[in-house]
Image 1 (cartoon, helix red, strand yellow):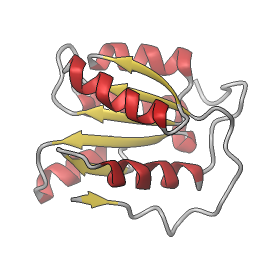
Image 2 (image 1 turned 180 degrees about the horizontal axis):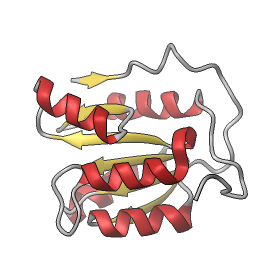
Image 3 (image 1 turned 90 degrees about the horizontal axis):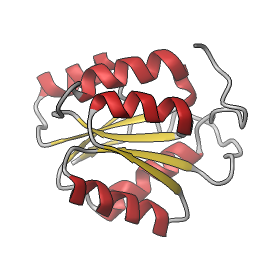
Image 4 (image 1 turned 120 degrees about the vertical axis):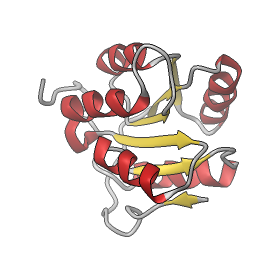
Amino acid sequence: MADFPMLAQNSPSTACEPYRVLVVEDGRSVAEVLAMFFELEGMETAMAFDGVQAVAKAESFIPHLVCMDLRMPKMDGYEAARRIRARFQDAVVLVALCGWDDPDTRKRTADAGFDLHLVKPVSPDDLRNVIQTCLHRKTPQASGSGPA
């Protein structure tokens, strides 16, 4: 079940082309499938396989959207989200990909800075709704500037 509270909150804006999606998942095959989905939807993608890589890749790739697993080696998704959110503020949409749909986990993802919480397995329609959420949000400047 997906939670998309921001669809109604954000006014349409022009997205930078191409739209950049960072997929963060320690399961390489899952990451590759997600990245392939976003590429087929016309997005530019990058992958990271742990939280440390996610933070570093976000810095160089300047994503509009980050879809991130929570349980990963080196640094979990909660901490990686906090760091990415601190760097990019509201200029990135952070989506938690997780196997739990309980209130405590949803609170933890929200507290860590995630905008959306998707429960695995994620459907193509859920991912398309995420894309629509992102396209209706303010996006990073092409130069990637923002708070350091």
